Image (cartoon, rainbow, N blue to C red):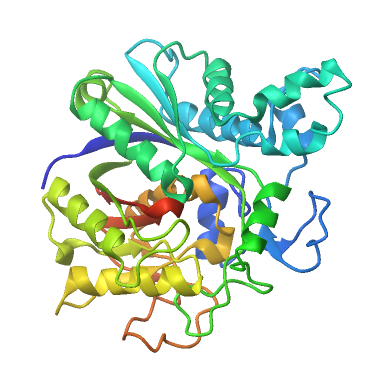
Length: 399
């Protein structure tokens, strides 16, 4: 296998914790973040459950010490918090000391601000500044500004695979010598637009989501932000850095089947996993744990399950689970928070439970791990699939 790119720092804010440590405790103690909607005024408040971050916008503003006249969207605020954690965790004291970039993923961007001010800003010019933060790129710009980063800053928005592609691009930039250090990840806050959109698609559950269960009814939306610091081996050696884990493989493929549905045979997922194995030099049998995309929608779990069966052919599929019953589906942030969970699995030698599972799907003989399992974890495969057929796979390995 290839050595991979070093991960030296991580930061996360989600429905199950405001730090990496809090998230890990929740995962191993079955503390879920799914509940009824509290922070958004919507007619669906008592109909669906979501994974909300347990902080109001006012609390986030205070924690970030933002001026009262700021135009930070909720996505930008949680993104900044997570990115700050990651930089601190990596022991970075001078952000521009090396060629450093930021690749941030989002799908919602500043939609929460647009919803709040859209009907008034035509008559009130002072509200225009809130509309300008609608753009997804505004989130990355604000994070970079708060970090004092002067290098490359860009945004990726490929729906629910966005953060996986952010991590993949960051790793490639380091491997090809374009950058020395890249902060990668994603952030998405809940918004009415998201809730209404997924409700229209009829893929939201009115109960807790049940990935890979035969009676699954759909997903729970969530909000989160997570960032990882990727660094070259030269920096690691020069500064004697602790390596948390490595990005050893990655692959991206397009299912090219439907705007919002995956193909029944999981063609995109299969190709993404296949490419990730080719990049890493690993065999499927060397994976110790798979963090599946596992959205608990009828289409995704069937498609992903069939793709796994195709990858493993006659071999046994390794222990797998979806962590979305803890956090909800956090869209563009999903692959980033699950990257953090994958690294934690490697560091602590654990497989997380796939909560709420009761009945095996009738289409194949796959059962997720339903209780916390301790075992040696050398390699974790993490899947993330987005609307438009954009499928991405990452492989994380012990350093």
